[in-house]
Each structure stands twice: as C-alpha cells, then as structure tokens.
Image (cartoon, rainbow, N blue to C red; front, side):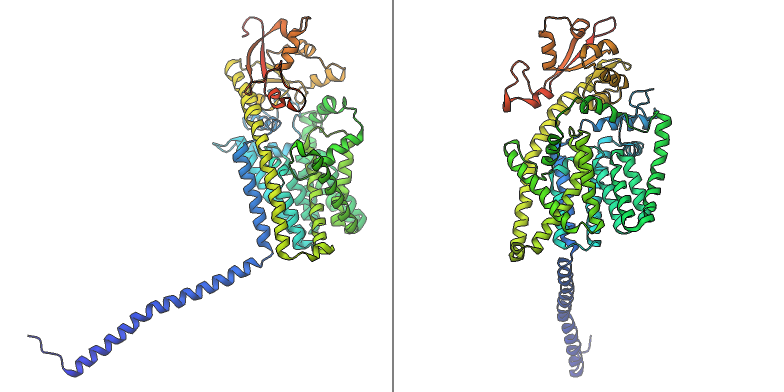
Length: 558
C-alpha cells in the first residue's frame, strides 16, 4: 500500500503544477506576440511596396498581358497573311527548303527571322504553329513594355509620363490585335524598343546587333538604324560606326543567302504588292497621309464615330509634335521624332497605306511621344497642377475605361471576321481541297494564307506574292481573270460568289464558264450576291466570306 504524501511533498507538487500551468498559459501569448511581429513586418513590406515606383508599372504590364489573353480567348483571330509565313516555316521544318511551293525558290515572306523562329518552334514535337506565333507575340509585347519602362526611367522622365506611355501601348486595342494575330509585328516593335534601350544605355554594339535583327524581321525598317547612325554622327561623330558595323555584319549573312538562294536580297512580296496595289493607286499623296494620320487614334472607334476618331487622331499628332518641340535638343527623344517624320514620308510617297500593319512602328513612336506629352501637361500646365492626386487617378480610370470599352466593342467585329471569313470560308476551303483534290493539284486564288496552309496544294496567287509569272503579267497590263486562267491552266479556281455571278450573267463565253464547273461553295453568312445591300447596309463581311471553287472540266477532274 502506497504511503500518503506529507505536507512538504504536497507543497512541492503544487509548486511544480503552477510552473507548468503558467508555462501552458504563456504559449498562446508567445504565439500571439510572434504573429503580431510577423504581421507588423508584412504591413511594413506592403507599405514599402505600395510606395515603390515599379508597382503601378508592373500592374499595367500585367493588365496589358491579361487583355491580350482575353482578346485571344474571345476572338481567336489570326491574320490571313500570317499563314503565308506559317507555310514557309512548315516547309523548312519538313526539310523542303525555304520555299512556299515545292521546288519554287521565291522570296515570298518579308520576315525571315520570324519564319526561322517559327521553324524552331515546329521542330519541337507536339507543337502547333499558331500557338508558337502567339507565344512570340505575347513575349515580345511584355518585353516591349518592360524595356520602355527601363528606357524612360534611364532618361529621367517622370512617373506619370512612364505610366501614360505604358497605358497607351498596353491598352490600345490596335496593339492587341497586332500582338496576337500571328504576324511579325510584335517582334518588330520589340526590336525597335530593344535597340532604343541599348542606345540610351550607350551599348552601341548591341544597338547595332539589334538593328541588324530588326532588318532580318522587316527590311523596310531600314530607316531606324539610319536614324540611329545619323543621330550618333551628329553628336559623337565616329562612334556611329559602333552601330553601323554590327548592323551590317548581322544582316549581311541573310543578304548573301537570299542573293544565292532566291536570286535577290529584295523580298519578292515588295515587288508584287507594288505592282498589284501601289502602282495602280494614283490617289493624291495627301489622301494617303490622311489615311495614316487617321489611324494614329489609339481608340478603336466604330464607323459611326469617325469624325470623333479624326479629331482624336489630329489631337494625338498635335500633342506629340508639341512634346517634340520641347525636347528636340535631347537626341535620345529626337530619334523618335525623326523616325516618325521619315517613316511617314516613306509610307506616303510609296503609297503603302493599304495595310495598317505598316503603320505599327510609327504608331509605337507616336504613342511614346503622346504619353510623354500628356505627362508634361499633367506636370507643367496650370490645370494639371491644380488637380489633386485623387482627381488624376479618377481621370486615368475614365480614360482606361474608354480604351477597354471601345476595344472590346471592336472585338465583336474581329471575332465575326474570324468565324465567318477565316474559319467558315477560307480554312474550310483549304480543308476541302486537301480532302478532295490530288496532292499535285494547282489552285488559282487571291486569299493565299489560310487556303494555302490548310490545303497543302500548289498555289497560284493572283497578287503574285509567291508567283513571279503573275507579276510579269500585271507589268504587261494584264489584270483579267480569263487571261490568268488561260496562262496558268490551274486545276481549281477560287472566286468570290458575286464575281462568279457577274461572269455567268454576261452573254460572252469566259474561260471560267466554258472550261470549268463549280464544284463547291462556302457561304457561312448566307450572303445573297443578287441582293448584297446598299451603302452602309452592304454586307461586306458576307461578301468577303462567300467563295466558290471551280474545277477544270477534263478527264480526271471533278
């Protein structure tokens, strides 16, 4: 039997119990103190982060990326001409050489660097060309905004100026479609930004290397390295050679390859577009200038607000010009203004206003100048100084809301173009040809991209981008469909529904109607060529989505 505890032993047990109890009670208190300490650290970190100049910029860049992803998810838009480059990349990846049609060495793409990047992407098992093009575009867009932020900070611009530049380029829907549409344009803008960044940081050799890569991407931007070199000659003399030599050395290998492989370093597409579009266009130069300036409105306004868009565009030009007049002595900013002046002159004099993507480099430089100008107005004008910080943020949110509103309003039209014209007509026609024609069949058509890529057939394009013989016929003054058909004898001819109707309604015999028969048609919008609508009610998308394929009448043909 256990002996009862004595008085001293009970006192000792109670003392130890008190110590244990106090320790137990102390645990939550210690934990609370530790959590409070950590929360205090987190609060201070949040406060420091909010006061950091990079946070609003990072938020804008993130927003720009998110908007482009939403644009892709909703519209799924890919340019028609992008598929010309895609087919070149596919041919190279399959070991067929730098060709569009097998065995025909025609320099039919103006962007060899982009083509080779896509080729590398396609060599990765399980990849798809549109995803690769969009990945390059999105990466280039984020890289552009990041480099612009670093460049503008280096140049001593204010935070409002930096944020306005990022907001204009990041939230303009005209850049959303360019950055996600599968073309080389975002890579062009990235290389412009990267070479400007290198120049501002006085890394002149890298400036030249990046300028050389820019020419690999689009040779028509030769004026950019010229402007950089001229500016450097004016300020530092012979140091311009540090830009010029790397530019030439980087681009020279392609010049040699193109001369030996294609017979000329000049893209055949430049010649073809000149003959097909520019040469017949005799509109006054001022009308071409007006087309370009009108497009410099960063908002994607509907046709009903065309006058408002024109006023905004001229206001953009006015603010950019005003900002240029304030900083023309700073060569790093003057580069942008000089480039805009020369590029606008080149586009207008060459009448190259048919494709808006040619305006993107000018648009990039103008929006930078516009952002800097608006930032200067906020800082220096009496009205800008009188606005409180709250009012500035409120106005910024209003303008941002307008950009988003009109941007996503335009997305509906772009989405319809993708659904009806690109997917419902062009891609469908290409897949039909792949499934129903001989692998060696020849197809004469005008919309080369989707159909050429998805059909895999030999293309005879009526613009002449990959068909030099077509360019020769146009130079001789031949612009007649019957003559083209009689010259090339294609197995199939793709034609608009209304053009086909017009030919069939004529009383004379045509090569198309006498030697070919309609084998299928694509009309996803139920366009009626006999009742297309008039004026603003004309169903232009319906017309551009309605095609017929005619097959040659002879043994073995459809």
